[in-house]
Amino acid sequence: MRARAIALFALLLLLVLPLPAQNAYPTKVQVHAILKDAQSVLAQFEKVTDRIDFARWDAPHGLISQRKAELKLIRRGVIPAARRWMAGMRASERASGRALFIVFTHLDSVKNHARMYSDMVHEYERNAELGAELSEISGTATGVIRKFLPILSGQFEAEQFELRACRASTR
Image (cartoon, rainbow, N blue to C red; front, side):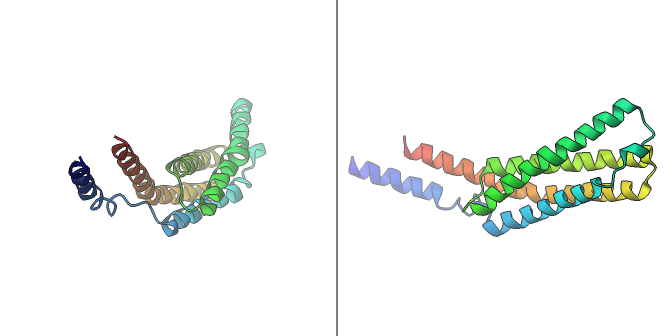
């Protein structure tokens, strides 16, 4: 019985030891760097969307009201929520996949809204400069999202690997 347990443990070690290098959690430095980039996008979005002048829009009142409410939701809901999750990750020893995913989805939402407002400001406010700034924010966010994906994927892979190892050890 003892020999079987030792053999099983040795087999488990052979399966587990080579893989952590492939399934390593993203480093704190990697996570903090991507969070810094995400924070920069959020700050740029807030700064630039402050200059949207809905009173100058040549659009139906219903559309203007809807876009104002939507922007308010992004600025008072999505962005502060993303910042809370980012602060939690900065304060913890290791980020969770859930926290990274939530920040990722909030950043994606900001990216999409920057693109949408870029088009609308250009069309309804006739403000090409502001539209270009919003478009640039959307592009910057796209770049941050591209850098975010391997970190998020690495986090999920490491968590999944750890969960499988835990399940295997309880069998």
